[in-house]
Length: 324
Image (cartoon, rainbow, N blue to C red):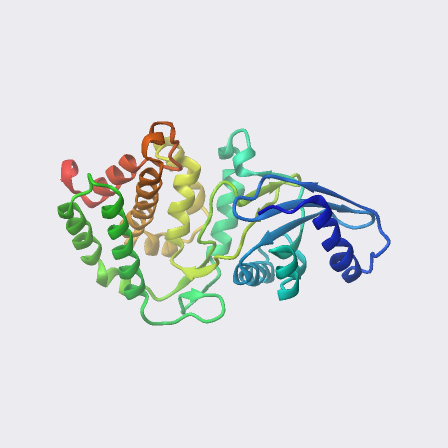
């Protein structure tokens, strides 16, 4: 379901403008096709900053976006300001969406940059600074626990392995067992974790924006958690560099240059585990995507890694198969 310009006009006139005391201001609406499951609309109001209107069918997603954005901004991490939210049931019944009005930052997302590696120092500095914000409880921003982190990881690994096996007939039960044994062999290393970092949890080329003023903004901040920084690190590494060794070397040097020796040592103790954990997530997603495409699979472009390459990198890190 999409909304027409007339429907957007109705919500802007009846809800947003009165909230901003701009009832009689002129404005311009530009519908976009940028949203996948949601709607994204550009809004310009006379005498006010440019805005993006986001429409979502999930109220909790909007609430988490608000909480994540406020949390980042309170720690000095740049994220577009949320100007207004309409999460009323009446609005949802009328329009089919909840609405978030967010400031529009002039700039480009990383996907739109000519060479994303030119912005490497900006992105690594921001994420290293964000990852330096820590606490002893893992999990959601409002809550979290000092206990159960290994159980949480173990459950996630089990689910990913099950999905990979279900969607890829070439992935054998023997491989599945070997992967499981390797992950669980590092239980003591993971259970020794004492502190967790503020993490984006879904960092990729579409939700990191470089502004015209050369500042980095984080977008779509509904998934923030306190987790080991290595998870964000490896997700970013593969989205930025795929499996290009030269780019990966530049990425790692840039990121680690912002860390103390103690932090680098802490990172290195569990780096193989979290590298494989992230790669397993990519592999099970690719296996599912390919299973849905069927006869169209030959036209599919994997992102950021192909299923085969993700599994190769896992087995190389685990020293399995051809890499023993």
